[in-house]
Image 1 (tube, rainbow, N blue to C red):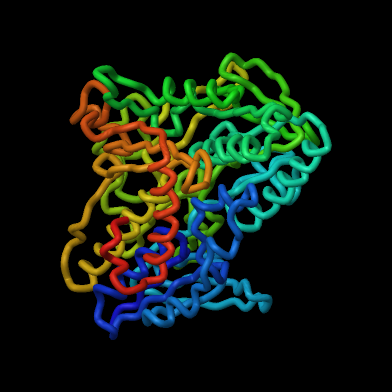
Image 2: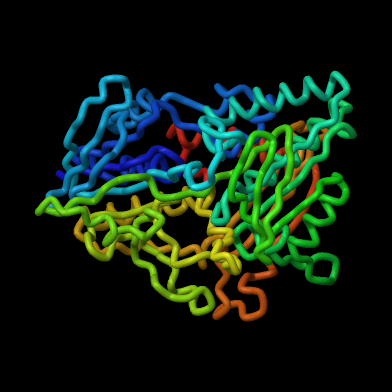
Length: 475
């Protein structure tokens, strides 16, 4: 009998758990360790954050769902991994603080990100002056603060709204993009748009880069770039934009920043939602002698090193350097999925200012990519349990990517920007001109996207519950 422990119950962890239970005989044990009792459909928090969707519509309780599938659930933090002795030290997050030692034969680290608010002084809703939509708690706080700002506007005040990234090495620009466009649409519906100066601030090298180096698509006989696409959209919406910028400090009503040229400035705001840097979850790796070996198994950001080509400069990274099995090269029974795995580097071109500030839009690994990787990892564990060499591979240079960026929630008069790319990480050996297959890549805006966005919410909430036919819904 094999015992598989999965750390995390987001897209990667939940997908992996469902596939393991589907593919393995009942004699094998699957355990999910997650600090929170609920699964949250993160992409819809953009709507929670402006009061257009109730928080309860984005969540479901994990314990009954997993129990029904024959999967054990432990609500706890993973604090230490002991790979030589094959156990995880957990701390209960149910109020008891109980410490447990959970043994495993195979371990999947799908813990998602540590939201590094502390990486920017004054950033964040709990101990700072800005807001976030990266988890349900923060999305509700953002909603309340945004609606208070709306109340001020209704009383005749003019306000400044700042949306974007709050660190020079932040990712998830797509979530911030959805939030700013939904705020625009919400204010238009309320008849308040003329009372808000809406501003975008980002660490992207160019507008529309989104941490993937931008996207090209064939449109009407010419090649369109996502930069042109978003410049046009922002011009239509009246959104001011500033890129190539790292927010270095947030004060009450003020974001202080540095740009590529090393210039320092500040932007005033009444309401700000700034995405923090993502780091690996703070888990210590300990060997059989009690020594901390975290630095051997993770990169400096805390992400787990897997089968990637690490240590190369940005210009030397090739498609073959991207991980494909997500298996640790040191401990073959450990895998990392979703945000937890270490990419070989950024997709977007990095920049260091004359003052030494790193401004790099780091590679996104959430949503669709996280689900795909969760499935790949689960099937590789099944291979090993059944005596085979891991045979399932899908690197981000072989993976399609789809982003449906909501521009307004309504299925009657809303819209969404549909962004398709293949592959997610460019492969210039296969596609020398643009790194991607332009026969697949696409950029569209319209009502159909709003329908797709809302349908995905329903479909993936259904899938993550493991309901009948769940595996027929593609990752």
